[in-house]
Amino acid sequence: MRPPRLVCLGNITSDDIVLPDGTTKRRAGGGDALYAGFAARAIEPTAEIVAPIGHDLPETTLARLRERGFSLAGLPARARPTLHVAVEYLPDGERAWTFHHTEEDFLDLSPLPADIPDAYRSAEAFLILAMSLQATEALAGHLAPLPGLVALDPQQDYIPGNEDRVRAVLGRLDVFLPSAVEVRRLTGSTDWPAAARQLAALGPRLVVVKLGAAGCFIHDARSGRDLTVPAFPTAPVDTTGAGDSFSGAFMAALVGAPDDLEGAAHAGAAAASFTIADYGTAGIMAADPAAIRDRWLEDRKETR
Image (tube, rainbow, N blue to C red):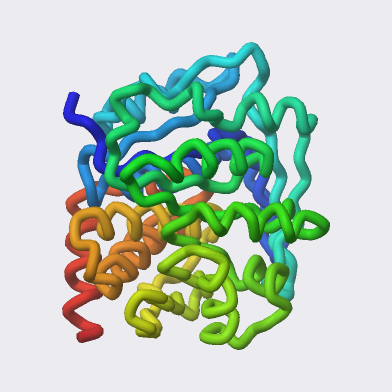
């Protein structure tokens, strides 16, 4: 097994999805580790996942991971059921989350430093996904001294009341990938250039604000450069996990070409477009990696 260039750390869940029109999909495969990991591996074939798994995780999920070439070394088994999450999409674009598990379950099924295989520690980048804030803090503190880049795609629900803790985590990051909602909760602003600079001042050299169908806004604190990259035009079925897939593919492309921010954003947009084409993780897990790469290159060429 080649050492991974990128490691995605997150959760694997079972999701109930309720769309604004009332359409409901129950027990869809979910979890940011799968959305990000499958997207990342389409761009960087050595990408790996670290995500504790519940005792009742369907064998079909493990089979799909094996088929795509993932090692299972980063999937420690826990004596708890798989995390069960309900997400309701509201007419105003916000999401309401209901967690059918305890905080103890959430922490135990979030990755901690001890779960990272030794072979993964030399990775060029680590992507910390939405999970327990306590686990996020532990991972950021553990990974920051390592040579690899440290990136965070946060969870919007842990921000209110914990703003200072989240800002402290930003001081340990190289890349921050928040959604528009998360930026508003941290800065109170929808002026993306100003908000991105405010967040970059806390530590990360790259701030990538994910704007859904409007694409993304990127601020590079090293050069002072700003750029906006559009989303890939796709009729969405279910947008759950689109941001995670964007982040996974973005970071995978970034390790391959660290100065090509526009290319990384187009990789993220291409991966997200496959995610939103089906419910839960079905779209990104079924997508042919070659098709994702082709769409990435096509999207990049058309917008130049």
